[in-house]
Every structure is written in structure tokens, then in C-alpha cells.
Length: 315
Image (cartoon, rainbow, N blue to C red):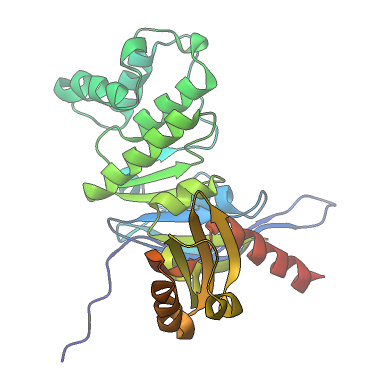
């Protein structure tokens, strides 16, 4: 029996460190020891509170900040080489564009820098501007763009040249709920087409909705990393939803927790070992069981619990 092949990595970061030193001042460790592997064709979330080292890690990967230590690879190449970034699209946390240019002019400029052939450039630019909802503003000067419109333009420029790897630093920043939904759908479309996405975000609901795997940073270190389903699984319990009964049967009440009743539907948690007995008791009482699912906490709850535990350990 042959060993299962390891998934191919699009991004590999090993032992990343960044120390800022100033004459007469104490050293500042922005990134202490971060290792991340992003599998090809997946959406990988990078989370952490302000100052955790997320943006610094991304900038070291892209050659925008010189690392103090560590190994960085993109598509199997040393990230220090320009050729490694040929197939990478990047949206910085705060994108800046020359205000006197129109959206069309800015996209043409960045498309030329990205190496898009001249005979394809205008067609690709118009397609991307339409894709991010800016087809009605292609000739509008960027000085007249709202924060959300500039963010959409930043996403469009990150996709110029059909990159194999897209790195997005806070892509939903400045966007309204419709814009945030559009960004989520766009990331899912990219994954469907085989593009790898590394996403840094404070929008936990966004990360939970699209990411395959998550790395959480805290104080410049990796606090947790796993597939998001395993990360959020609450071991040993199940969530039950039932309707058609006025109250829970006594055997169910004894083992149920987190009980809620809304719109004729009961929802509660029970230990895995009690699921069969609970379902039988509900059925005997005339209830209609709507769902029995392994219990999973929200990413927001997990994130808050993880950071609280880290704070206790430091204290």
C-alpha cells in the first residue's frame, strides 16, 4: 500500500521572524515564529487581533518587508526572486491609486505592469471592472470614488493577469454588506477555477463562510491552525432541532443544554451518547425531529476563547 501523496503547496512560510531595531530603543518583535502552508486550490484564512503580525507576514512573503529570519516560497520558488511573484495578485490592506486617473486608466497602467499583453489588456480590464461592479464608473476619476469603490478597484487590479495565487489583506474593508457578499462569492469562484487564495481578515463571518483552513496569529506566533471544520467542532455533543411539542419530554430535559424555543421550534444540545435515546423520546412524544447535527461553535466564539486563554497564559 503506497503512502498518500501530500497536497502540493502554493505558499510555504517556515520560521518567519521580523524584529525592528532602533538606536537607543528596545527591540520590537512584530513576528516571532510563524509557519504557514497554503495548499494549492484552497482558500486559507489568516486571522489575529491588531498587532498579531498578519500584515507583516504577508509583506515579508511578497518582498515588501525584509524578514529577520525564515523561509518563504511561492509555487515552489524562493519568494525573494521576482519570478516567484509573476503569478501572484495582491490587494494591500489600504490600496492607493493616483487620484487623477480614471478607473480604466489605472487598470491599464497596472495591467501593463503585470505583463498583460497589449492586445488583451482592454478586454481583460473591462471584464474585471464589470466583475467587481464598477462597469458604470470606468471613466470616473478616482478622486470621486468612495472608499468602497476604491476597494473594489483594488480587488480588480489584484486579478489582472489571471494570477494562480491571490493574496487579499482585508478585502471587505470599506464595503457594505452587498459588497462583502460579492467578495465572498468572488473568492469561491476563484477557488472553483483552481486559484489559491490567502485571505487576511477581521471579518470572522467572511472567513468562516469561505475558508478551507485557518491560521490564527497572536503576539507574532501561531496560536492555532487547522481545517476550519475540525477547528470549530465541539467534540462529544450534537445539536437537535424539533417541532410539534409544547415542552421537552422529561428524559430529554435531563440531558439537554443551551435550550432555546422560537417559532414553534425547540433547539438544544445533547451529549453524543444520548442522541439515540433523545430522538426516541421526542418521537414518542409526537415531536418531529428537524435536524441532528454535530455541534460546531462559531469562529467568533472560538477566536475569543483562544485569545482569552492566551492572555491568561501570559498573565
